[in-house]
Length: 251
Image (cartoon, rainbow, N blue to C red):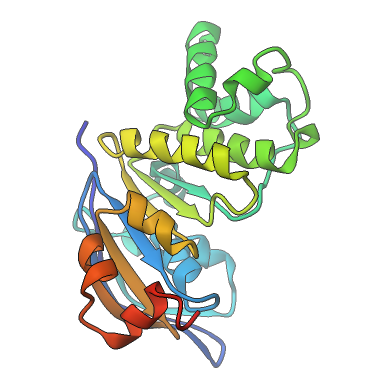
């Protein structure tokens, strides 16, 4: 399945007087897991918000520069709602809809026009399996999603993001509320999904980026320090600051 790439050009974001991103430029090829690492509050989440334009919800944000999806500026698309359907987003903590487990996953496809119950059933099961949740909820799909445990709700959020079969999947610290065993299961799924979509992985777990990403960007203090193949970032980075971060000397 063909996917789409992301081209970030001279992107700067400020929240009032606070600089969140300063003149970031990088390319994310299609069908790749692209890692973004860096200390807390370095601008990683802001970059994701610019990709799917949830930055629009921050009234104080001033955005300059461009984010292009296959050559089209996301700020010039005809429908921001259609854009967000193409870009799945999973945040650090679960944001469940006050609906059943089944309807949490089926909600987006229904809104996009899917009505056939059989098709919905197959899609819901597929997405819950991809999120390593199916075996735990298959006998209680009518349960209110918000009654699941925190880790289960996070995986339900991932299943919901996958339900629209996005071109791009943005993961912002997706494993923060998930146990290590389940995290490894989802990592295996992400490696399989790479052939179907472009995955942008923001993580404070540098070894997670090392395991999953083909290329990795290191952002610190709102600036892009370095971007390269992941192996180079972890074995022979060009910048001393990158080496200090991935070896745990700064963080």
